[in-house]
Image (cartoon, rainbow, N blue to C red; front, side):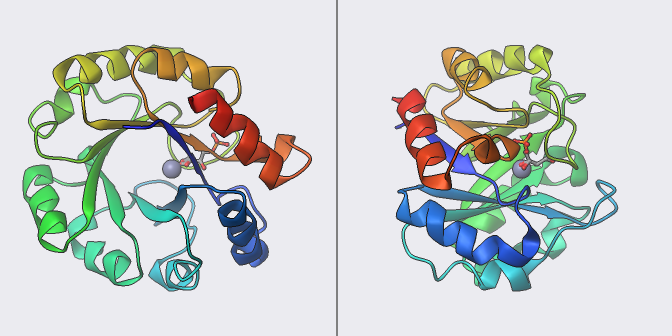
Length: 214
Ligand code: DX5
Ligand code: ZN
């Protein structure tokens, strides 16, 4: 599968998320990453399905919800109805990851399972055969702009060795130097948040970072 970036809206002024997503879509972004936080699984609260619904009519990208919430099984249908074609939940947030992957498939969307830096790759060993994606957090979730945690790369390599075709996404501290290193060990989807703002325009960020994926 072609490697791609997944720009995150987390670092934008939240009052301006829609025009920023329009810019990203016009620049050719194939995936938009939407960080949903509930103040329980992680301390901050970001936004819910209402805001997501106000974005997904912008044509072009696939919209993915990264649910950093407790009891994700209670919420996934809202995000599917809001237009997300992929829903990612945390392995640490549910005792029924296998069932939730199946439920997402029955709703007609892709299922991603995320693991925090403290969670071993083995936590997803029983779902790599059924999930569409594993998200390896490369920072502790909750905030943009944190430093990439090097030791998480080994987990990407391990999961890739189990399944050569599954999507493996990395999230946290991804920039023009860490992206190629994560790609080198088998990641093929790269969430980029605060680093987008290091470029003169979002269009240039999408073009230059996408070129690193080729
Ligand atoms: C962090 C979020 C990330 C965040 C990444 O909890 O899951 O998606 O947007 O931000 P950066 O790229 O700044 O680390
Ligand atoms: Zn995220």
